[in-house]
Amino acid sequence: MQAIFVQFKCRPGRAYSVASALVETVEEISEVFSTSGQYDLIAKFYLEAGRDIGHFVTERLQVIDGVADTFTTVAFKAFGRE
Image (cartoon, rainbow, N blue to C red):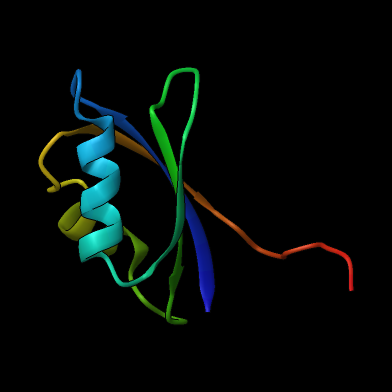
């Protein structure tokens, strides 16, 4: 599985509805957080190996009503306590 993080800029007043839409309609989502700064939300997704990230973001995420912009980061290795 490939982990990606996508930050979302939302249209004014739409961050909570975008977060709800992500959780309700995108099965690849792991979690979503509201954030401060340039972006309103950040979400973690797990995609199958070899899946086209660009198509996923443009066809599944950017089309959600209320999304104004996205910024995608691809994750390579997770570090943590065992």
